[in-house]
Length: 419
Image (tube, helix red, strand yellow):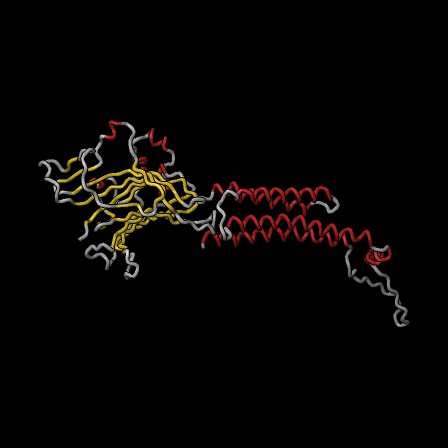
């Protein structure tokens, strides 16, 4: 037979998300409620009775399953350690409150980094016939409408908390059991409004118990409850166990990466376009500008070095490579136009005179007797001088390079932000 255990949680801190070690740290206060008929009735007139911290009561077997480190937070002052963390009601319900400092694994996919969304979870498993479910223990009724609260003023992370999903489901040690992992309860909470909360703890310390601070330190989100039929929720067996999970839907904050990577690299690419507006004869200026932009872009790309080495291409890698190609192409473009321009110095004098075509006008005299007067014709010059061709290439690049870079941005940002 299952022992029903109702669980609520308060996420008091979230941060230190590491892509290198694929984990994150959190401070989580867990409230558990179950009924123990073996407890003696409490005196009349008392809705509940605190349990002495030195007393030892039986508690359900619940473990964190995807943790790296779990530490029960303790208060260093001896007087506070004597405060109870367990209460018993008249009908035998037990409420236990425990504060955990945990480090939990989070497998991340970094193809879209730094425009990525991640899904990290905190999972607890109940064994020996423990049926876990999200709900409202009696000491939780005054905290808000949801079984999970978040201290929005304590979440300092490079991620934005978009949504939280709380699930309760049944698993089995038998891999061949049909319906393994069937879900019987879930809460889906929208947390996008949490960004409007205060993010400075000192302000809430100055205005303690103000409505604004109370709302932000116990932010409930906007939640929808869903219940489903799970065939495995029958009599408890040694092969089955239940789990509850907090799934955190995270989106990376882009402001830091815009200021440190995207805007500086865009400025370097735009600076390389100045070369197209300089005279072809200013060789030192154009070569120096091209080399400086290439070296600066190479140094800028080194900012991605601290990231973990992965076997796939990330969004930031695509951006860096394309920016490097643009600045290198600008340098190679001047090498090409300078080579074309210098061809004019090696042409024979006769060929140069023919290219000028008598300044564009050729006098042709007709000797036909039926034509009373000579006719003057002005045929167009069929070929331009090498210097004109070089200037024409510069003129085309003034338009082509910005157009291609804008086109790349139009494709890049929707692709990685939407998919």
